Length: 146
Image (cartoon, rainbow, N blue to C red; front, side, top):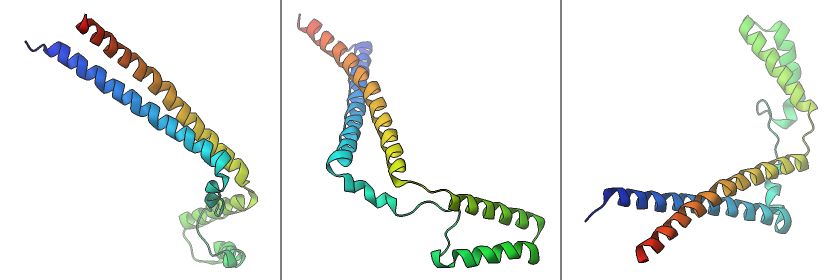
């Protein structure tokens, strides 16, 4: 005789065991990858050092000339009040960006810590999820055999 309640319970247990196992696997893979790129293949992270974000992309050779032109334009060009305000905000953002010296090693450390915390959190969630549900499945299988 088909027992719908038992069937749904079994499907639920297997499904959540599988979800827990996937979370555990992906978190472990992330930690292993982080370890490999940190200690065995440290050059794998170097591709990210090349470019720090700018408020807007400007040709490096023309930065000073263009900024001087924009500063002069703020006073002499025929701009609306909104356009003048937007231009002055952009110039302030650009000046602030130029003043910040971003250390690539600090950014790399921050990114690695973020990845480690994400992967550890996945393992902390996935391991109990898998173990609890798989334990219940094993108990049920023992009861059916007995």
